[in-house]
Every structure is written in C-alpha cells, then in structure tokens.
Image 1 (cartoon, rainbow, N blue to C red):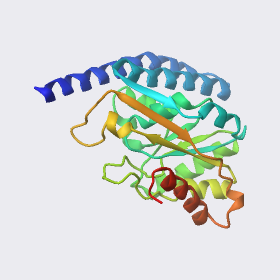
Image 2 (cartoon, rainbow, N blue to C red; image 1 turned 120 degrees about the horizontal axis):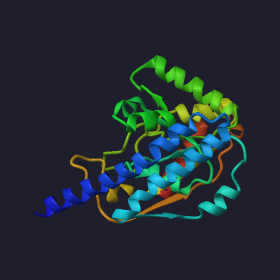
Image 3 (cartoon, rainbow, N blue to C red; image 1 turned 30 degrees about the vertical axis):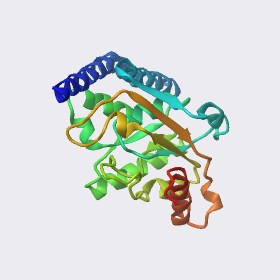
Length: 244
C-alpha cells in the first residue's frame, strides 16, 4: 500500500511537470523565430525557471546558498558552469538559481521523446556520447557558442550517479574546453536531489529541500594544463563532500 501511494505521488508530480512543459513549449518555439539571441535566451531562461518551479507543487523546495552574492562576482562574459549529477532535479535546481541563461549539454536520446524532444532540441546542445563524430561536433559547437559570448551548463560526470558514492569520476571534456578557450569555470554543488528524486529504478519521489551552492570562479590561465585544472575543481567538490 505504501508503494502504491508513492507511485501515485510520483506520477502526479510528473503530470504537473508535463503540464508546465506544455505551457512553455509554444513560448520557446516562438522564441526560436526571434532575430535577437539575447532576447531568445532571456525567454528561454524564464521558461526554464517556470518549468522548474512546477516541482514546488509537490513538495520539492530549492534553497540557493549564497548564489546571489556569488553570481555578482562572476565574469560578465562567457562562463562554463559544471555541477554534480545525482538526479533529474539537478537541472531545475540549477536554472532556478541562475541569473543568466546557460545552454545545457544533453544526451541526444532526450531529443527523441514526443513533444519534450522538440523542447529539448531548442534549449539544449544535444550530443550522442557513443559517436566520436557527434562529440567532436558538439565540442566545436560549444567552442563557437562560448566565443560568441554564451555560457554553458555541463554535468562532467557524464551521467546520473546511481552508485553509492557521492561523486563519480569527471570526464575531461568541460575542463579541456575551458582550458583551451580560456573561459572561466564555476562549479556548483547540488545536495539532496538524490533523496528527493532518486535516479534508481523504480524512481522514488519525496518532499524535501534541494540545495545549490556555487564555488569560486576557476580561471584556467592559472593552471599549467587541463588535467591539473580538472584536479583542482574535483578537489573543491571532494572537500565540500567530505571526501578529502
């Protein structure tokens, strides 16, 4: 009986999420037609925040620890934002926090879903991680986007963490991109999202508070190579998570 009510709660939550997605779908679609990229991005950011706010209706709350003060210190131009990835809630947690639009990197499978796939294609940079050509093209697209003044959101673990460890090994792509482009990188620590919406099967949705905490701005120019740059960011996470 307990599992029955958990499933009712879970599917009610996803139903509300779906309604929010349908509301923003035509708005994002129309934004694609606008000539101004800045205006497009402002509309997309508002839509992402509206969609993310749908989780409040079923008891998931978001607390942004020091994010306003931190973002005032962020560079005004291009920026790469990375975050740990324990749950589907990590993305809404990030976009409720952000004061600027940042294009998220997403797996190409998300673009194949009905309706949501079109929305995902409009607001993300999709990549097929199994294809070397797709990864190369995505790296080129990200480099161009940063050079044009845009910002990116990347989950360097590559996939949702389903292990019993607080952090999975980071892929080098985001750090190599930052190092080679000279664009600063900011890590964000997301806590408690796994408790509220576990990535394991069957998924379990619980009321709770998801916390986001941004770290310092990491300037790649201060490091001799991309590997040492990556190790410095990983060390920040490990200290925050009590792993170091």
